[in-house]
Image (tube, rainbow, N blue to C red; front, side):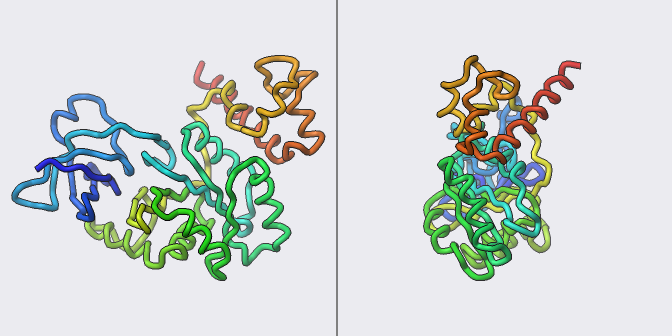
Length: 295
């Protein structure tokens, strides 16, 4: 029997596909292995169900993707929730800006969640959130302990396929459990089918949530920018566009040029200094990567 479904998890060559609420353990059909294919959590697939074993099948085709994010590795997202703590660990503008760039480059809709609001002052929380709200990003300030912002975030994610991404230790798992109590127990139940123990986020996994799906993802501290060309970086800072028309040169790197609308906007606090500092740091990293690859 041919069915279609959503890959909610992949592990060691097995793919776990949600078909109308039934979890089917699948491998890839032989003809797909004879050609190059890409398959990950979030992919919509066609599969043949084993007539003798209803919870086993073979994936025969991967349906076209609407988007794809390399890290965390997931396809067809409605939203990527970029999660960072306000404190403990201290908020990093550079890590946040790198994560935003990865989402911008992948053309994935995103929103920002700032956790551990109970440990930060209101002034500190709002100052950080304002940097990104002024650009046009949605930013939620939440506390998993007090419940601040949880109801609004839960409502925003309803019916969406959503992945939470961010470094380890910033409260992603706590936020997920606050949004849907027991969600990590659900991931643990799925994990037990592949002989894993208690919940530890090592692989991206989707679980049903309020008409959609939620995903916890592996944490990471070092955000690599390997696949982005230096020339493409300005377009990943949407607030630059308004001021680029005042640059004398086009394209403009917004670094050494004598007449630059972006640099002027930074001086006038129309662009957040933290964002421009991130831009310069990331631009240098991309140039070093490009030079290294030429050797």
